[in-house]
Every structure is written in C-alpha cells, then in structure tokens.
Image (cartoon, rainbow, N blue to C red; front, side, top):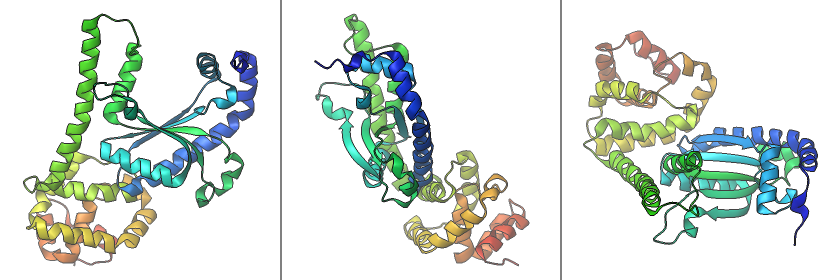
Length: 325
C-alpha cells in the first residue's frame, strides 16, 4: 500500500515553495502562447490559468492517496470555447503544439443513458522544438493540465461546484431528476447553438450576419481581441448593399483575404495602437472596407459619404495604399 500520501503539510509546503517560481514562469509563458496563437485558428476562446495552492495540493494527495510527484495539475490551463466545433480545433492545436502524456475525453466515460460533467483533459509538457519554448528548456520535464470545454460545459461545471453536487450523493429521486434534466438541457444547448451558428453562417437570408461571420475570424486572427457586434451590424446594414450577390462576392472576399494575408498582418502589427482609437479598425468590417475600396471604390465613397465623415475613409484608404481623392 502506498503510504507516501501521508506526507505532512509542511513537507508539501516545502516542496511547493521550491517549485513555485518555476510554475509561475511556465504559467505565464503557456498562457501567452495560447492567447497569441489560438486566434490564428480564427476563433477567440477564453484562456485562463491557476496554480494550486499548498492546501489544495495537500487535500488532493490525501484524497487520491498519491505522491506529491503524481499530481500533474499543479498548473492548470483552461480554454473555454463557444461551440463544440471550436473545441475540436483547439484539441488539434494542443496535439500539434505540446507533448501529450495523457488525454481524457469525459464524455467517453458516460454510457448512452448517462449525463454528467463533460470536458477534454490533457496532461502535457511543453514542446521545446517550438521556437517560442526553446528558452524554457529547463521546464521541459514539467507536466501540467490543459482543460478544453465549451461555455455550456463550463457553466455546468461551475454551477455543479457551487451546488456542492456530486453524482454519488444520496439525494431524493425528485431532486436527482431535476439535476438530470438541467444537465441534459445544457448538453442540448451545445448542440443547438452549434446548429444555429452553422445555419447563420450559410443562410443567404441572413446577409449581414453571414458577412460578419465570414470576416470575424480574420479579425480574431490579426487583432487577437473581441469586438462590438452591435456596431458591426449597424455598419454592415449601411454598407452591405454593395455586396449584391453573396454567391459571387463572398468567394471574392475570401480570395482577397487570402491573397493579402501578409499585408493585413503587417498593417495590424504596425498599428496596434489604432485598435484603441479608430472605431473602424477595431471592428471586423475593416476587411470589407478595404475589399470594397479595391473592387467598387466609387460606390463605396458615395454610400459612405451619406452616413460617415469622408475623411475617416481617406485615412483607412491611405493605410491600404489607395487614394480616394
């Protein structure tokens, strides 16, 4: 029988204090790496992290009856996505960018007639072959946890914790049923939000939202930040009449974005400060503005002048390398 779990709290505290600085350094490095690179997938998940405190460590070692060295979630990273399809993208990213020691998909442990906590858990180490992590080679043996889940899954995990609920609790049947129903609703929500999102992206009757969905991923990629959706919808309702045929114009917009990746990357890199001071540059519709400047400049100028100051468009056109005078 393993008796190492009977380690005293003072011994755990001593070990933790030796490693704490190391954990904080790798925490900051990994969190920054994820926040910089996940938007390249054209999504913007939440990324947060925590380091277990010594008391939590002591409780886990006692409960699981394991050694201090067997605790692999002293550092925990959590990535929260909007949709299940984004979880799959993030999982592939983790598999490519970290050394995977273990992977657990919680849903795989549930039978067809069971509901419960859903999340994907990785135990990983940094991959020092990636240039960003080369300077952290001294930490290459450190194992930590990355959890990936949807917002609905996170909601259930958070509420479950607040309720102090566990599936093996002895509750009356009516109360268990209420919890079961709530869990099922959140799982259905995940599927329905995904389905609705796909409908919006591909439905020609939702022209403005369809355009917005096509360009917001690029904004996440280059700006690495969120935006105000109400502002975008208002602007697109004015400018979108210039997109006359979605079937023809959206593929042209996609091609424009692909052909100008390096130029877009440079503009965003050189004008980071403008994300705080230029309302058009801080929104995804900036891509549509530059696209229309190239394919239908005079129609854009006419429509713009009816609702916005023309000098604003002049500034944006100069950034793109086009004159409108």
